[in-house]
Length: 347
Ligand code: HXC
Picture (cartoon, rainbow, N blue to C red):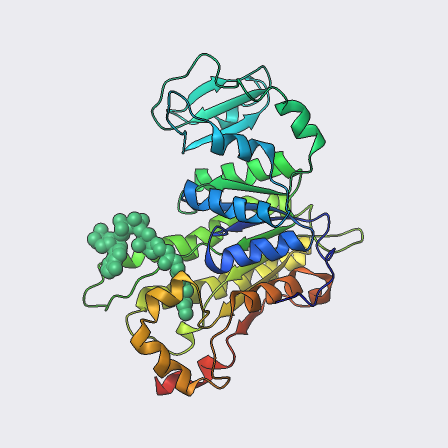
């Protein structure tokens, strides 16, 4: 469906979207790109990121040459799936090097760090002689960055790589989530903790690590511009949901983080912090996992609007909140569910 917003709505903005490689996150990434933002997508799985970046590329959103090269490189026949490219000579990139990284220097300015096990070939750069001019000539609009929000070092690295590629950060979208159906009787404390680690602690970690950059970025104009944070939540914890004790606790914490940061960072840094609570959105991993087919027709019976939401609906809400149209909205979690949660007690 066509967007009602003007194409240059987010022109010049840089957005980092965790969980941006699939489902709702990918639609937000795509719509942000279509509306002019440079987009960094963070996710755990390289092949999902590659597919997402390829999808953005097919939209005409140009892809950063580093990402293109990383996805095409083979060293001794092995794809460095956990590798990452860093631009800068060795002394400058020493802070990027993690323990166990293998460093392959392509030239004095480009280095690939790999934390999987493969041997360097003598010159893997053959075939990419125009890399440097490519970097200078092409706008960098979309990149995929591998990382797990449960690991603070991943969060820091991805944020810093985003800054290195795009120069700043205006918008952070926390979309990374983990979930499954489990009754409290069957759910181990570690299973409970895992979902809180991804959804709640992961959201907080990304916000915390991004703060110093968000202080300087932001959609607004004027002397005290600040960035924007969007936390993807849910409505399941507004009442209670069967087999979702972990997700409900995690998203309740996310909503609370949204309010606390909106108060403190809104006051101190003019950073707006909001959430979006999607309902049942068709074509998402969440719907497939949480609403098995036998439940979906029953669910539709009592939905006020009698239809599922689309990923597009969530992305449009994100665009509104990210634009100046939402400049007075801070600390709220916008429910985008067609009114579904109002009828949930009858579930
Ligand atoms: C019970 C489970 C389980 C399951 C994992 N665990 N899956 N317990 N039932 N189906 C428990 C494990 O037993 C283990 O505890 C602990 O959780 C960690 O499991 P791991 O498999 O080691 O964890 P990990 O590989 O890190 O994977 C975590 C994950 C994640 C949460 C399962 O991979 C995941 O869910 N990925 C899918 C992402 C997803 O579905 N996203 C959409 C979210 S939908 P023990 O005690 O055994 O060690 C959403 C929207 C909600 O958020 C609203 C919808 C309307």
